Figure 1 (cartoon, rainbow, N blue to C red):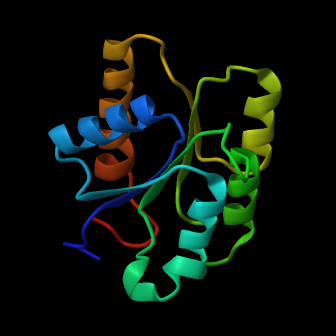
Figure 2: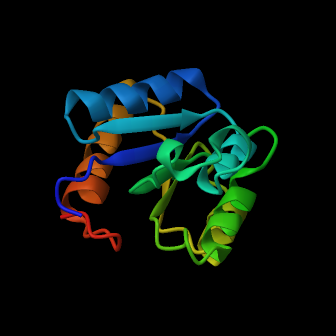
Length: 149
């Protein structure tokens, strides 16, 4: 829907990485809101409106999900798989944002229908540039199946 606030779900247990993602998106006014989750279970509870997130008013669906692979409680691949198996959630773009360049991790992510797989650069400026580009693509140029634009 035109005029709908842009919501990014960030599932990241590394506080430094999360802060950089949030600040970069806010600085460039790419997202109206970022909801940050520290583990996979909390993210799934939010998406499926369980526990403390029960009730649609508290849980608008995100326009894009930024998902780390190595997460406490529920692993990132399991979160991805659960999202993509849900009729309600499977059209939400999911971007893996991780430090892993392992071929098996990339293959498992794409096997489970990830929309994009990005390896976090080591350097601050490179990471910041990646986040700029990611934000502009997924939240600016990309047409969302839920009707944003």
